[in-house]
Length: 294
Image (cartoon, rainbow, N blue to C red; front, side, top):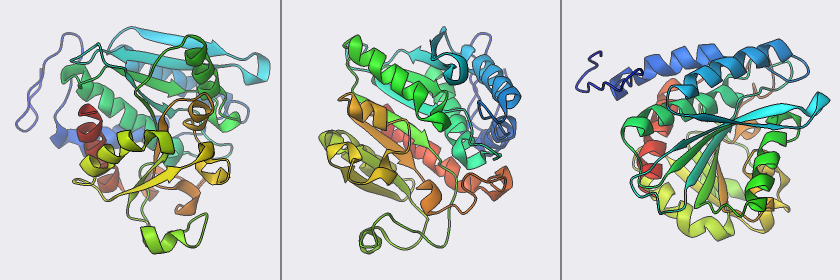
C-alpha cells in the first residue's frame, strides 16, 4: 500500500494509484509502449509490447485472447471484462490498438490510446462503472483493421449486444492549427487543434451526445455524427470503430483528429516529447467521468 495525495487504495496483489500521480503514470506507460511495433516492419517490437500489455492487463482479471488470421495476418486481441454495478445492462466495449505504424515511434498513434485504456482499467477495477465494461486491446489495426474486424464479426455472429463501442485513437496532440476533410467544417469546429472529437454513427447520437456533454466539463469536446457508416467521408473510418459500424453496432471514435492536426503522423517524429500530456490527462479524466455514467 502507498499513499498518494488524498487517496489510498489497496487491492490484493495489485495497486491503484491516485489521480494526483497521473502525469507520472502516463509518462511511464508512454515510454513503455511508444516504440516501433509493426507486425511486418518491427515484429520484435510488437512482440515486446504485446507481452508488456498482456502482463499489465492481467493484473485486473482473467484476460481472454482472441487469435485471428494466419501467416502475415496473424494477430491477437486481448479482452478483459470488468463487472459494472448493474450487470443486467448491455456492456460498453472500450478499445484501442496496440500495434504501431511502419517506421514510426507511434507515441500518439496509438500509445496514447493504450495508456488511456490502461488508466481507465485501473480506475474501473476499484470504482466500477454503471455498466460492465469490456476492455479490448486490438492488434493489426495498421494492417487493415484486422483485429477489430475479427472481433466485430465474432460478436455479431454470437448476437452479443453492446450498448456502445468506443475506439480510443490518438488522444494526446494539440496544435495551433486544425485541418478538416471538408473546409466548411472549420466554421463549425474552429481553426485550433485544441479539442477532442467524438465521431459516431447517427444511430448512436442519443448515446454519445450525453457523453460529449459530460466530457465537455473537463476538456473541449466536439461532436461529429456520421451517416451511412461514414462511407461518404472515408477519413472518419480509419480506426477500429468502423468494423463495428459495418456489423450494425453503435460505435464512436474518440480522437485528436490524427493527421488532420498532427504533422508527425506515421513518422519517426511521433515521439513522447511531441505530446501534450496535460491535454491527455484531461481527456482521460473526461472519459472516466463520462463513460462511468453511461
